[in-house]
Length: 169
Image 1 (cartoon, rainbow, N blue to C red):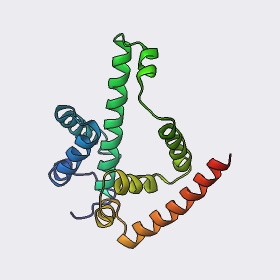
Image 2 (image 1 turned 90 degrees about the horizontal axis):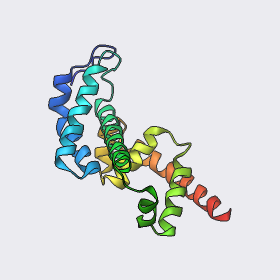
Image 3 (image 1 turned 135 degrees about the vertical axis):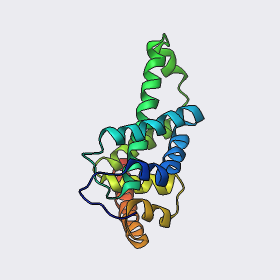
Image 4 (image 1 turned 30 degrees about the horizontal axis):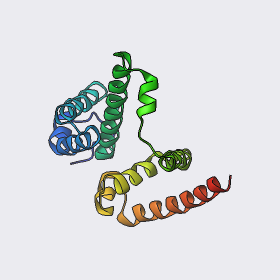
């Protein structure tokens, strides 16, 4: 794709080139084919609505981020609707099947990511959650493979330090 910096993005070209990636991400997060298709459609609708404000720099990263946010919003909205439809919040909490260790780990992750650069968080999710290779992440983010490795190495070092501090508290 030729670079059209500071010019309007080409929605059709983005859809043809990145539509499958967006749908894969939505499937992965939503675990439901119909909801994933709806989410992917919403991603490109958002792109269409906001195309004058967006640049075509790093389009795969932009679409990955919009896909993730769209799906997370759909998950949150679905959960909120379930609660409003009569599900008792106390029953929901009581039935929540989380071990204490998992809750502690989630708290640690929140603290670790709190001050991280959003792109570092995105790289970590792509590598450790989505199972992408360093090369795939580099292609998505627009960095070299060595740049991705360096960011993750530095992140892991900071994360290890934060985890040690957390357990000392």
